[in-house]
Amino acid sequence: MDPNDAVRPNYALEEFHEERQQLIDEGLTEEQAIRSLTALWNINNNAERVRWAARQERLEEARQRAEEDDAQRLQDLRDEEEAARLEDRKKNKNKYAPLKRIKIPTDPTILPAQYAIRRLKAGDYCELHYFTNKGLDEAMMSTLIAEPDALVMLPATDGVHSWVPAAAVKDPKAAPVTKDEHLTWEEFNEAAPRIVTFMRMHDWPEDRVNMHIQFWTAIQAHRWRHSTDLLQQKALLLYQSQQRRRWHLTIGTAQGWSLEEINQDLLFEAREKLFNE
Image 1 (tube, helix red, strand yellow):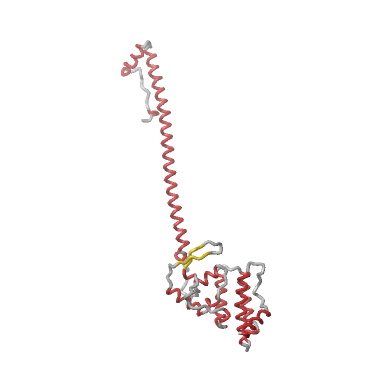
Image 2 (cartoon, rainbow, N blue to C red):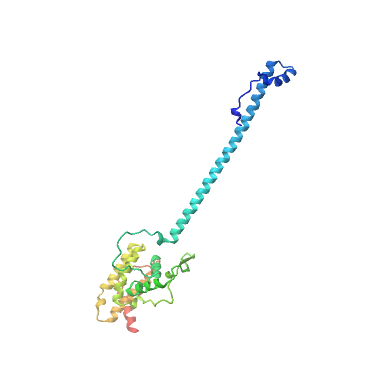
């Protein structure tokens, strides 16, 4: 019972005669006995109020701690659920890809091999073969027969290993890749515009994309492109293959350079190499 609600007795009433008489027997007058009993009750009630207040404070603190613990558990649960959702979005990007409400395209969708996509994402050298009609057909066939959940471990440039889809790794048993220098001009014309599109799709810096456009435009516009000397035509494709590989090997170093302008000396060396084969 809350001592704050207690009502102080009237010790002058007949029902407290015995209590008064005990004090009177000790030498107090009846009036003094009444005041003494009243004072004693007040002292006890005040002490009870202090103990009650302390107990209520402890109970309130316990209640607040319990509420805080419940709130923290609820927040931890929400955080775990949110982390799980983010992890799911990270692992299953296709599941959460934005839905484009447009009609089914009449033109076939261009889907290069995952290996080629991984190379482009990293900014690495990638053979034009993967973007020719033949390369795209091979990628489509590979997609239809590949195990979608298969993973392999690869080392990254920072030395940390990571799991990547098996389709993103070059399969040594797959159909042989045609080197750039062995492409036909028709295949070259198929591949160059497509690889430019995918460079931009994977956020290559615009100056690098433009350099490749100018490089391949210069190859196409060179006077040897329509020469009656087939070695000159093939030399352009060999030069393109050699210099694009060299550019990827030297980029970011003190020996880096641009592909935009054709080096005639190296082009003649490429023709000489073909002539001597």
